[in-house]
Length: 125
Image 1: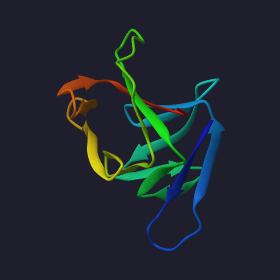
Image 2: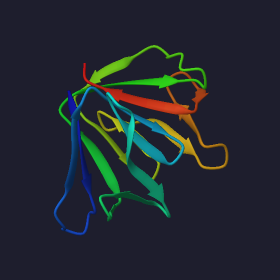
Image 3: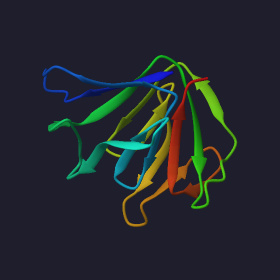
């Protein structure tokens, strides 16, 4: 199980989501497993959850990263990474740029494989 910690960077109290077996980030939404409910939305460079706005989120604990295509087929799994975070559409894994959301196409660019995917999946190792 993993948890996401949302932070504003302005010293306000953080917001936590989870624990959950996975989070799927597709388009401007984060869905939480196992039901797949939308728990956060990305608007105007901020993540909005529970009527609050945040600039970033971090996985609490280690996490794996995978991608899914439009039919739900998954890529290989990457990790486990000790630390995964996301700020302004860029996902960092162990302090290295791992993926970036291309706003024009709303596709994730996976840097290690130089491929593009509509969904990024964070899960527990």
